[in-house]
Image (cartoon, rainbow over all chains, first blue to last red; front, side, top):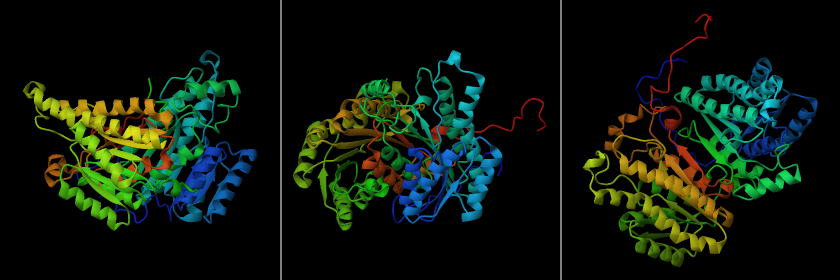
Length: 273
Length: 270
């Protein structure tokens, strides 16, 4: 692919309207962060819409792989093909191998959903370089690595849908979350730039910006923190997994004109001052 | 209930303004396909009659209610008739609006009457329509409202003063209303669309789409699935959001500005 801007001629036309909306039958998806309840719910929703799904976690640990496998079983129970991958998403060689594995098994990769998340909150003055680097690696570098590896397959095919799941913390300042916010905001910048770079290749890149949600490890676990959160959020409630999956499916099934953009699933949290 | 069930509009009644043709008609047909009954509204009776017939042909109920959204009394009557004909209003898509006389000229060349007519058509019309449907939605205990804005409500454009100001108004109106009515289970969002030409003249004037990052215009039907999603239960967690469908226009800017040559790190070989 050239790194020069495309010549000023319309590249490719619109796809014809689908017979069924939001139809992912015949598509192959890779969902990362599938060891977490949100990632698992996304994998399941893609399978419900018809996709075959490969699932990965974030660290590749044995504990995590157990969770990834149980999400994969749910995909299997819907009659879709499934593949549980054990991979450290911060290791470029491992990510490349995981994507290769999907391609070897199913000969294609149409959809990538980055749903991995490593929550980290600490006063900035007490944050070590190791913690900073680990937060950036898990939340931002992992997204870059999966986009690069999956993107190569998608660019060859001339078709791809990438959905990065990030956080309101990348949009608004949150005390004690400087490193996490920098990483999530980085995902937004990556999404916009990559969407632009690949705009004429048939690959779209979008982001779902999720508010504080029910199943996020560490958020809302502490009853006092939960009480404060539900009091200050406009929706008076945390976001549920079911509220996120529809946005991912809509973007995964999109016809190609929706790119470089953010769908905020946050119950109006970022509509407010 | 699977995600595909939550992406349906079965049993819902949608009122869509500006639905006699173009994007409004595309939404009316997509909503009917998703299971909704549709009230089609616009100023031209023959056009909304035709779209209502297309909705009925899909096996859904439909009504064609003529209205002028710049006249709040007409809007009130539109809502009354919609309720009388189809019994309820679960969804309002306020799609009416557009460029008006005088816009596109420098500000000092625009008359106050032209300015006010544009603000009426694009911003005050949204206020009238939303104000009229809120009471029935409050009574029903739920509602979805979708306004239509534009990338021009988020960025400026030379001499498009009325349109950019009115659409920016629609966007921030949407956010504030979302905060007012979210607690009553009414979600209010806005769609900012890129270039979806409706005439050959527009397509030519806009350069055939080659300055859009994806290299083409939006196709009219493509608004349908996104609008259906935003008005479906799958989007219950989305409120006060600006949803942009623009071929990468706002993300990358018009080409070639969204592009840089190769610049290696210092010391690296190119």
